[in-house]
Image (cartoon, rainbow, N blue to C red; front, side):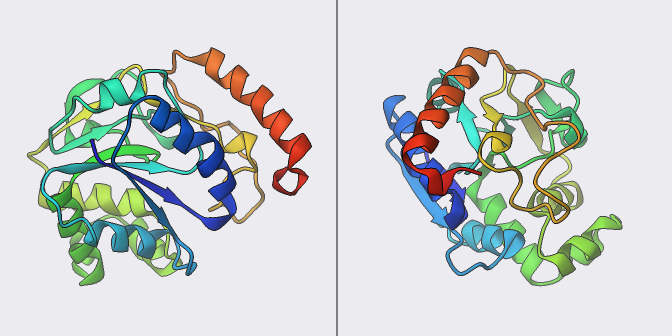
Length: 229
């Protein structure tokens, strides 16, 4: 099971002290940390990471603001298809009723936790870098491309344009919970840190782990006030 954990420097304290220990506790042994140290931005950093995946098989792409389910590694390691999503969020326009194997239009949207076959990731990077993304009819892409954001939307449009026939798998219960609201809010928002509706999982069964994380973060902030949001 190959994992690529995508991070920005300001979140490394959480990645290194909370996420990586949990992955290792669950038995993950092939973890690559991809850090945007040059401040390339969301879209470019993501496409650079995709282009770097020359190995066969696929990779779980994980963002730096998550809490893993108790059995994340056990369930995620058993997947070997072209695409899988481990996070469903209604504010991100996901439907919690489309679970299991689905057609591409019903695949969940965000990049919080997604498995992508490496050849598809490399092809997507080329599609974006070469300007082929302009074949998409989506009015969002030019705006996102100019802003250097929207890696998840860009990938979704790539799949719909180039591989609409491929199945995706939506994991229920979800494999992760989104906890950016506990560690400072979104790093991509420009109009403040907080959401009107917290972008939490719609299919999460390990709420006791969220309670435990809150307690551990409280203790961490007391000892490391420089990390407190």
